[in-house]
Length: 125
Image (cartoon, rainbow, N blue to C red):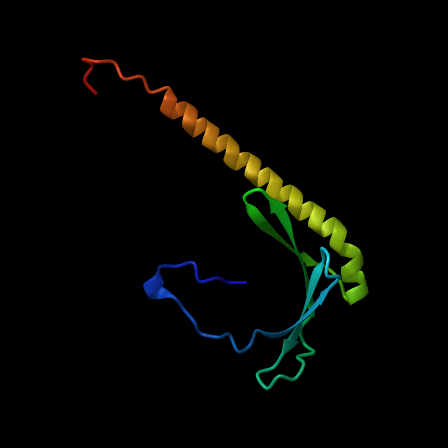
């Protein structure tokens, strides 16, 4: 999925008419949200030449607020997607945790680097 993360003056809002999907959402009202993306033609009819995509979504509650977790589920049916959901969310959660650990380490390294700069009076830079 492409995003518009470019400069505001260069945003592209053109709809890709050859890559349209109808969204269907299923939830257990607790933790799981499974999105079924059905490929469609511009007239809304099902495009049988492309595969249905399943996405699993949930969120983690943290003291800083909710963290969204999303993963593609390699499933052909809703039942398969439901069965794959727990392991996919666990794997994505581990990726998020590792990413936060790396960010924390980088912040600590930057803090140490800033603290190690000793300014000696009378020294020219």
